[in-house]
Image (cartoon, rainbow, N blue to C red; front, side, top):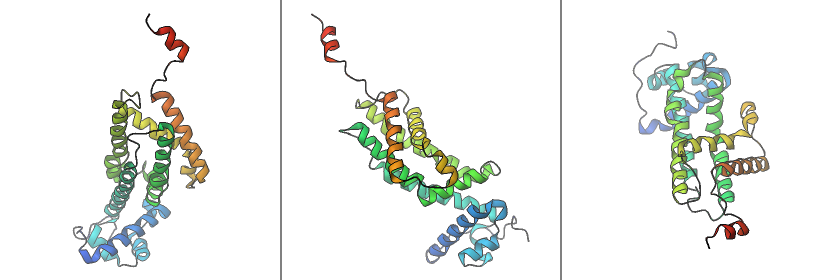
Length: 230
């Protein structure tokens, strides 16, 4: 029987099977990242997880459904890391630049270079063009979730006078693009930059962002005096 044929309907794991379910997804992620979707097989994944191939078929149906489950699980865990980090967003910053840079550094460390983020990024880079339909969960709940969540916080900062933003969604996308910019090569190579490199990269990103969206600087005293009505 070919692996593309579904054996039975996928069933959710029972309480006592949660650990086995997690081990299957972890094993599948490792095999998919190592061998690609085409090179992976249910037999390889079952051996990696220490379960029978029938167990995988019973819970996930086929290789395609298992890949989709892996992408969904990674996306959910990445989002959990994102929302945990968002609780540290500087809503009332005393030092806007420093606190924004610290927040950006946490985003990079907690979301970009965690295990799930790295594995998901590798899968997207290697398989996204060939198998776009398998990444529907990531497209629906991945980048857009981060953009919307950060945009809402930027809108509050703008309302409070900390930022000058007309389009919070655009500002959020540009902010995330800036904090990723210095790490593009390391993304492609699957390496993690040194801590000092992360600090420098996010500070450069935040300074560039604030030059575009930061509050207007007050005029120099002489100009302010000259502009004051008699």
